[in-house]
Image (cartoon, rainbow, N blue to C red):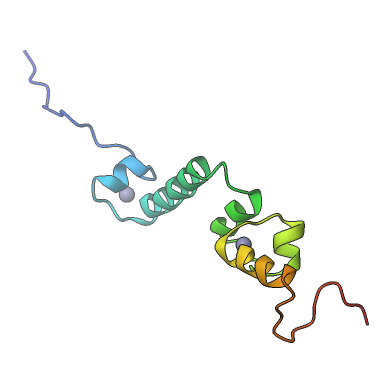
Length: 101
Ligand SMILES: [Zn+2]
Ligand SMILES: [Zn+2]
């Protein structure tokens, strides 16, 4: 009778988060890990505004701006702080979104 190798935990394929957690740091596994984290953030952050999620994806926009707060609807700390200052009339002398030339 043939002896089957004892593999209680068969190795996952490369390019999977599971393989990464086994300690593999090859390029494919690291990419899988990055994707996994991104998806995880998406799942756990699904109640957040879309803009904030996109921000975490690396799609950088300027937080603390009219466009980010009002257009994109971001309510992150920076944008809320900006909104507080904006609505209370506290400005830094920068060009305000409402002013036209
Ligand atoms: Zn690997
Ligand atoms: Zn923001």
